[in-house]
Length: 423
Ligand code: GLY
Image 1 (spheres, rainbow, N blue to C red):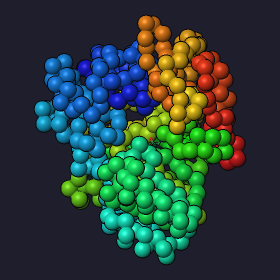
Image 2: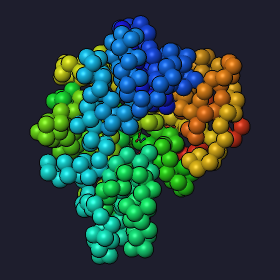
Image 3: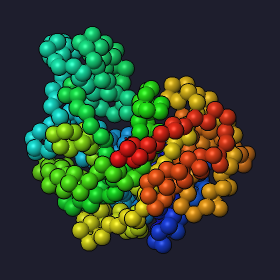
Image 4: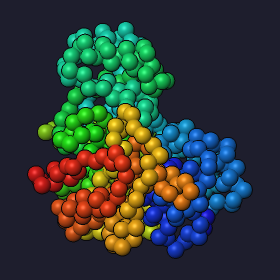
């Protein structure tokens, strides 16, 4: 089987790594990929939003399966374009990817189907938003409706801050058309847990849990990033939480999408918050999390291609999804200055250590190969993942492995998974 993966970050490297293990797969392509993915796949210089080129490539190369890893092409309808040409594709169609593409849609869906989430209002004009915010309780949360590279969420402590936020989102359109609609959400607190799941339109199978660390600095300080590290499983995702979500969240979401005529096939990522009033859905994503995929997929026992095919064919109920009874931690190595300003093109060394150690992974995010040398090519450069019998052991292993890699201006958080020690 020939597989094409669309995307080029750590998540797509983790997907490619799992795909490469499948006996069903003869050849992997990745558009556009990165230096690490290039070691197990043929890189195709096509951007994820170049739909026509992707479809042409898939037809010309007779690709048997396309896996769309990223949010933008999913929300933009790449799956629909590929399917129109009869190309087998894994990921939700445009009308289902809206679960991630529109926060207002997701909130309305949860409200209509009684899926636990926090209170909200939505606005399409700044004047009404400001009127509402004058009498709001603070802090409050403003969210640009559409995709905004994970940046369109503002926590405001006062009306003055909220006013500035409305200006940014709805008037100055800092996040582009994403700000045409804005959601104002109740501010809730608690431990965050990410639960990824496979969905075939009617059946849902959840994967092992994980927890992301979104802020740039230790102790959850600094700016929001794409994710600075993650661990799996989350000790806070107890049997009680899981039972609650099985009853009120997971199947309820899949059924809701079906009832709306938006059958969801692919990955639903549930961003949960464990509040004093019980678990609530903070957000949905329509794809694997990044870096969550980098700790969840290495622990999955099943052949990823078999599970993906079951999702496409509507046979997911036949799959016994299994994960190793261990733990994994991923520490992101970033370029100093991320997420604001950072250099690119810096040589990276030390990769060879990973070939010598079982249970250690060096997933590439922002890297490129030039003249046989691997260089930094983004803010998040590598995801260093290690397994261990326990989270504590996995954490120690991951941090040990971060020392194998060298590049100038290497930056990482030192407290990924520290919450484990407090659990
Ligand atoms: N790690 C969060 C995300 O993938 O959106």
